[in-house]
Length: 138
Image (tube, rainbow, N blue to C red; front, side, top):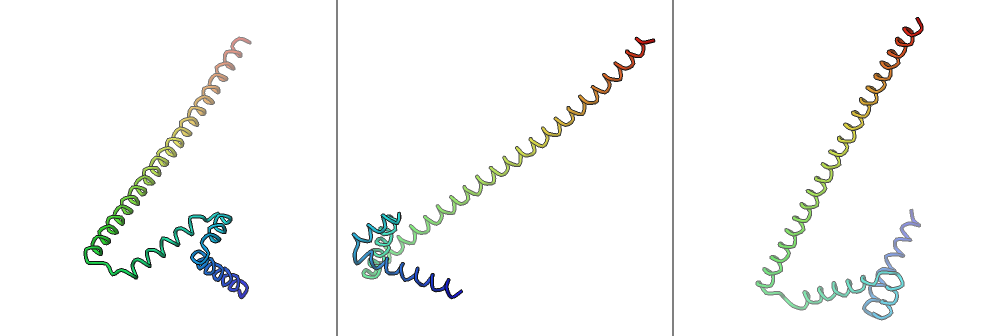
């Protein structure tokens, strides 16, 4: 357990050092990010820092706060609508799956009935053939 804690501590420290590196040596951090395959990560961190710097250095007006609130509310509603659409689509897919499963089961039952009917018909044919053969022998 102690080994796991140490590993996580080392990873956390490396992460913090990397974040600092993004601002202290941006060109080097970009090269490292490219090697690690996380090129967009550096840009996202810089954008977050810019947002924090902007908010901390500029006190927004009431109008800006209302505009930001309205924008956030609209985005949340859009996300809700998207989630509802996804839920409805998933429900439709599940219903179609159930219908297809029922159709396959019904088709299997019908095939089994046809198979049983053919077996019964074959038995009747064999019985008729036996009767005809017995009459032909007499």
